[in-house]
Length: 270
Image (tube, rainbow, N blue to C red; front, side, top):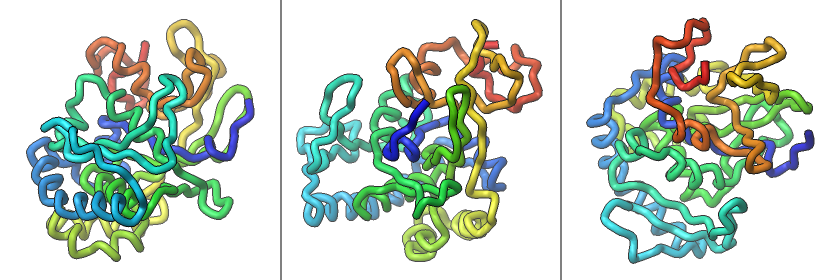
């Protein structure tokens, strides 16, 4: 299996990932009301970034967006969504709970997986969003409100059977420091805990081995352990996709059915 430079880093949207990242970072996952409150506080900051994208980076705002959307923007590069042959656009909902309670996570997954990312200076252990600064600011703000909702994933090694990934779930410390005032207004005391976690050499990162060898039950056939939430490949579409392509078609979560000690969240095929 070969992977192009563009595929070696990408953004993953996972509304359930925030609980795992709460354990990973030692931060407390906010409930729905707290998420909506923080998102509302962040609205002036987000809309300022939208203004900068339009005025200084030639992005176009769709003024006909409905009441459920806070933001709907088109980039100047006219990038396409390959599977559906549609022009990609960036959207945000009016409430944060729409992210975490959406009936079809693919609605948002299709948006975020086309955000451009890159590995930093050839450092496979860390990746960053590669977009205009105002869009980066928006995405990092979302990471601050719900760490784990968006992760920047870099592929560190790969072959025909599996690949190794390193996912960053928190913004860089220097970004948090530059935006300390607005983040304190948005998060309150949680900002200090977030800043502390970002300085830890391990807490902002999660490593996984992703296998492409499965039996009919969705189990890894070579016996290696892996996190299914980090399985980003869908052979039916011939390319990299987020987990939403499978999860949205599954039955309700069943936390009791699996007796494997994998700390998984009820989505596996058993």
